Length: 427
Image (cartoon, rainbow, N blue to C red; front, side, top):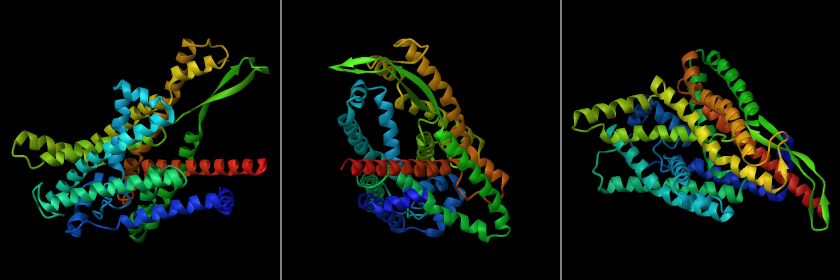
C-alpha cells in the first residue's frame, strides 16, 4: 500500500488530486472550530456528558457538534435526504424510471437530493437549536427572533458548504467526497477522545485491550468486505458481423456486504429523528406528551440502553437488505445475461436465473447484515467490558467506515495508476 502511494505521488495528475483532497479536508477541519455566537462552553460540555447520542453524532461531524460550530450538523441532513430519495424511488414510478436512465438520471436524482437537503438541514438545525436552548447552552429566544433565525441559517449554510466540499472531492479529488468528510471527522476526533484515557490512571492497561480489539475488528472488516460469492457464467459462441466470438467462462462476483457502510450511516440517521422530535415536546404542558417525549429522549439519547442497542442492530440489518435490493437487481442481471447469450451452468436462463440470483443474494446478505449489526453494537460491549473507555467512540461503526473508505480509496488509486500505465503504453 505504501509503495502504491509513493508511486502515485510521482504522477503529477494523481498528486494534484491527492493534494486537492487533503486541502479540502484541511478546510473542513478549520470550519469545525468556527463556533456560532453566544455559546456557553461549560453548559455545552455538560450536555455532551449527559447525552451519549450527541457524542456519537459529534464523531461524524468531526468535533463540530461539541463546539457548536457552523458545520455542527455535518452531512447528516444530506444522508437523511438520500434515504428519503431512495425510499421514494421504490414508491414513485417516475423516479424509478429516472434511476434507470444512466448518467442523466443519476444527475437529476442528485439534484433532487441536494434540494431536499436544505429543508432537512433547516429542520435538524432547529432541533439542535432547541436542544441547546433548553440545556442553557444558548440564550432562550423565540423562533422568529433574529438570534434563532441566524443560528438556523448558520447551521443550514454549514451543511450545504460541507455537501459542496464533498462533491468537489468526488469531482476533482480522489475517492467519494461525502465518505471522506465522515472519515475526516472520525479520524480527527481520535486524539481528543483517546488522550484522557491514556493520561489517566492505568491508562495504558485500559488502552492495550482496546487496541487488540481494534486490530481484530480491522482484520474482520477487511476479510468480510473483500469476501464474495463468485458465480460462474458461461457465454455461448456468437457471431457479430463477420466475426465469430468463441464461448468463454466468466464470473459474476456477489459481495457479502454489497451495501458497504451505508446501512450503519442510515441507521444512525434514523435513530436521530425520534430523539430530535422528542426535544420539541420535552417541555410540553400536556402531561402524556411530555412523558412520551421524555421516555423517547432518555432511551434514544443514551447509547448504553437496551432499547437503543436493539433498535440499532435491527435497523442495520434492515437497511443492509434494503440497500442491497437497490444496488443489485436479479431481474435486470438475469435479463442482461440472457440478451448477451450468457447462462449459469445448471440454471435455465430467464426466470430460473433470477430466482437463483435472488436466493444466493439473500443468503450471503444475511451473513453480511449480521456482521454489520454486530459491529454496530460492538462499542456498547467494549464499553461494558473495558471500564473507562466509554468516551472513546472508535467502535465497530467508526472502524468500518474508516477501513472501508481507506480500502475503496486505495482501489481507486490503483485503478488510476493502472489506467495511467495503459495510457503510457499505448502512446
